[in-house]
Image 1 (cartoon, one colour):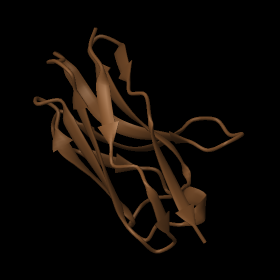
Image 2 (cartoon, rainbow, N blue to C red; image 1 turned 60 degrees about the horizontal axis):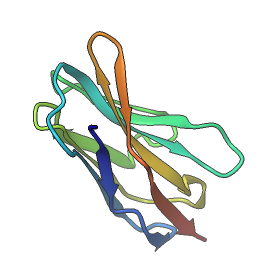
Image 3 (tube, helix red, strand yellow; image 1 turned 120 degrees about the horizontal axis):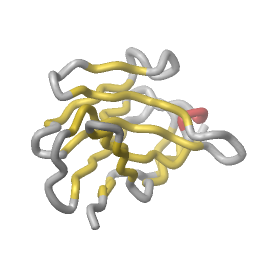
Image 4 (tube, helix red, strand yellow; image 1 turned 90 degrees about the vertical axis):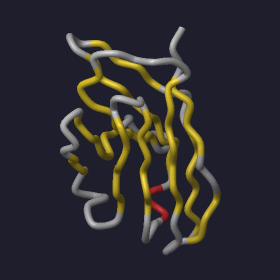
Length: 116
């Protein structure tokens, strides 16, 4: 079974930076996009950013200008560079891969904690 493997989560002070990585355990075909979601304690999972097969990127308003997504959907790899981190960025970050015609893969999550 295909797995998405995330890494890079850590404890960091406010204003600091982290880089998250995600790679598939084996090749995933027909990828439309890869992206990141996050879930803070007591809250629903929310969208963070995504990169499409064509290289277009999209961000949630809350992270625009601070986070940068990059990667290669053909190689099933995606990264999230997070700068100027805030305590409200604290969450478990999940990697997602969306495939045609409607499949979804999720990672197990990596914890990001930002201290004030």
